Amino acid sequence: MASLRRRGRILAMRALCQRDVQGDFADEGLVDFLQTWEESPEARAYARTLVTVFQRQRQQVDDRIAAACDNWDFSRVSPVDRNVMRVAVVEMLGAKVPVKVALNEAIEIAREYGGADSPRFVNGVLDTIRKRLEKPGRKVD
Image (cartoon, helix red, strand yellow):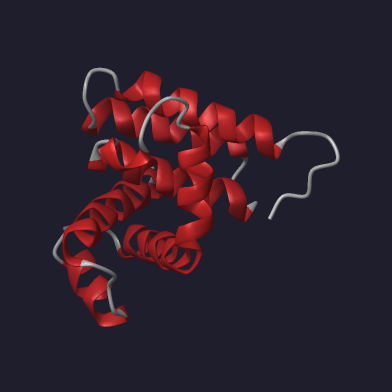
């Protein structure tokens, strides 16, 4: 069985995919969406935190991902891959989860929910972001 945090990450990815279709969630809409999934309250709470932080930092998160998508138009990235990476970048920037853990979790979720090339693509993009975050003397936002 997946860990509590992984289940929260998966819920957040699903919520963000839905958000791509419907637009930003109002707080009640996010709660309602998360309630539709049979999941623990803790996993739902973690997903809610991830989605809420993403909605506040959307431009910064998307800019980092787009800059790391060498020779690939960010708007053409599959919804699953895009939102798996969004969840990971929120975690990478938040400093509560080690960067390598966020990266590895994203690869595993991409392997389960994405296409055949998703794990490699997600790994490449997130590893580029990781390297940029870990440059000596660089202030992490």
